[in-house]
Image (cartoon, rainbow, N blue to C red; front, side, top):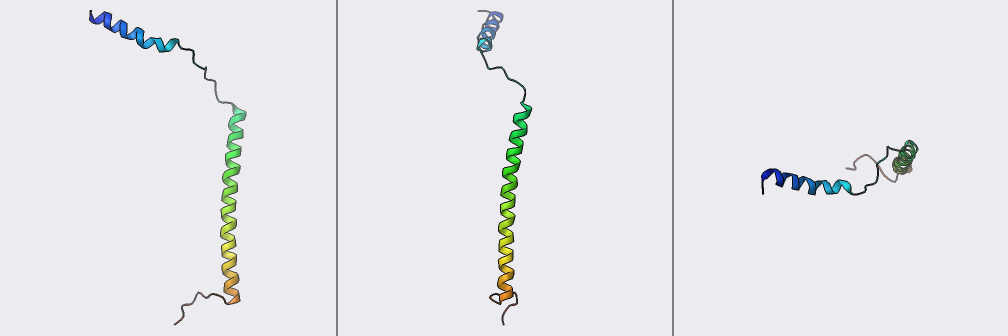
Length: 77
């Protein structure tokens, strides 16, 4: 078997995958992209807001305890 025949035989075997029916790829759907971006933004914003509310609650409780004299920031001797 010559090298030229071997090469054409390999090419025909490799090209067999090209004849399989593949789903055609379409471009991105603008409406879908906007909806996904909006949803991800709202979820991330909600989580960020909940984090800040939790930190605000901790700070408020710290200052309330400080005002009531339950805790002190001065080291006792």
